[in-house]
Length: 144
Image (cartoon, rainbow, N blue to C red; front, side, top):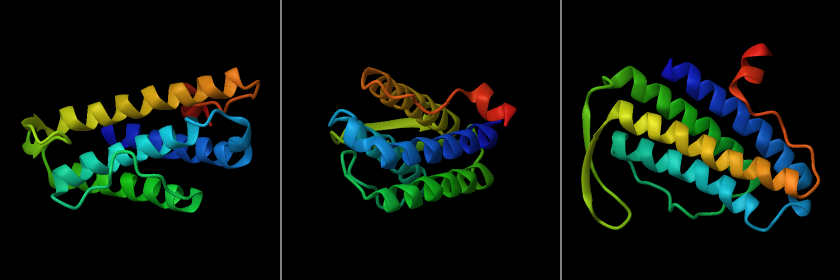
């Protein structure tokens, strides 16, 4: 189920990025950095699990880099699902330097919810700007 959930997020993020590239100049200033943030957060959590260097949570990327980061995040998440059991505990330090331990499953569910939350804010920005937002609901993805 988690691999299917992250395939949905990858696909939907691609759709949102396409619309951001087309209409970014019509959206609030916060919208594109918010999209970069949701990609960065996914990369940071993957990096914590995989013990790799992490992005800054507020890094801004080009549209082309965002497309690659979205792909890399998906690939890395699939690798995590293959390599680690969902119950495996991961020790990490948050951005304030505080130590924590959570399971792989909890971390990935957090990433999925975090992504959906911020993508919802982006969709609201589209609507507030008078633009038709891309369809991002899971059921629309499954119907395609």
